[in-house]
Length: 171
Figure 1 (cartoon, rainbow, N blue to C red):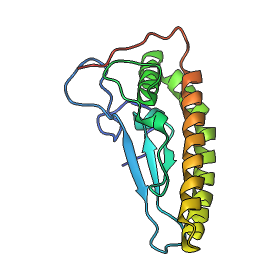
Figure 2: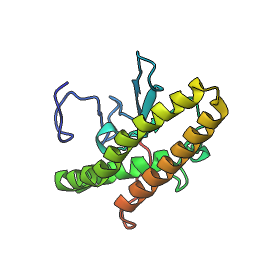
Figure 3: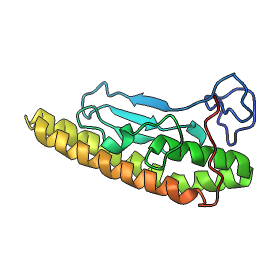
């Protein structure tokens, strides 16, 4: 798929529902970066809503997911990361291309930090497990994922103005 710099166009992995049409929408993404050489653990990159305006968080099955990522509500809530990303995406869609570029720019620094640190953690985790310290690996990765979730959700909340209209889910 060609690189897409905005939401315009007919074909993309990132599908937006903006007018209640029934053709669907991207509501989460998962990319698995496996390792054939066993030098590191697999890294699973999870995006909480539209791929174009998300931070893909590194997930390790050897650790425990942060409880905060499991908060789910059928209606908008302030304690659900999914709804935070939903608000960010819809704010960006309403605000226009310049704001979407600003949002992506604001997320890029954090995303690049995660790209760099995730593979270091994947190597450390593999080393600990290889040395028989699975519990230590789980603890390390659990803490790493919790800190990432905290940073990502905090950043997303900062990017949506307090006066931005809360949009209800299209049904």
